[in-house]
Image (cartoon, rainbow, N blue to C red; front, top):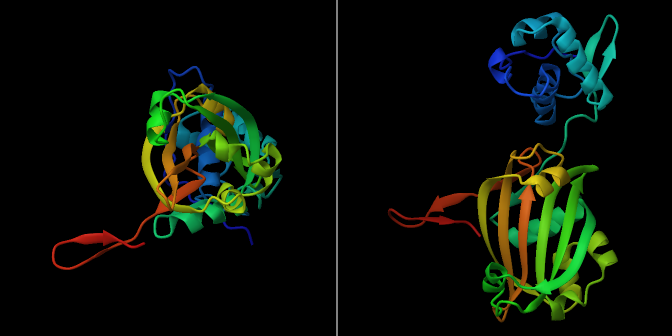
Length: 264
């Protein structure tokens, strides 16, 4: 039997009456996030139109439009006498990365997701890119823009830089079908070390459009340099991840008195 969803956490404070975005679409976005995060699980019954109208302090017609929009996106199905039910396919899966064994985790991520190559060009390395790749500024490099998807939904927007002598060994078709770390190994480049930085940023227009987000939405940005056993930088990635689709995990424990270390 379908279980009703608790309406806890829904309030008028989640709506901005001064924003240009219609109230029904704001409600749609709030409810969509609840569904995609799993807080409103698959096959559960949504609160009714009247209850939602009271919780958001809006008209029932406004709520009805929001629920109809959810149905149009196949996030819910609407049934007379039964109510609005979250569809089985609505809750989006997450990919979990791990610092404990980063390189293996990245290989697994590549196998679990699908890649669309948006652009591949050769260009002079900008100073910041050249510095991270241990190159002279202006040295020719390859830049590849890729969109990674999970279950057909945008997951990450990746800007990849590689030295030309490595990049030219990899075809565009291979980029779309084989994880990059596996490709590098196949081409004789064994990645030995990864160094990365993680921060939260506001999505600029290209990133927002690729990830199906509003411009300025928060995204997780990961900057990663991969090096081989000779300490040569072989790949630089600027990755922008939807925070509702990706989660990093790190476990630490105490090593000796008063000190800590991260496993792996």
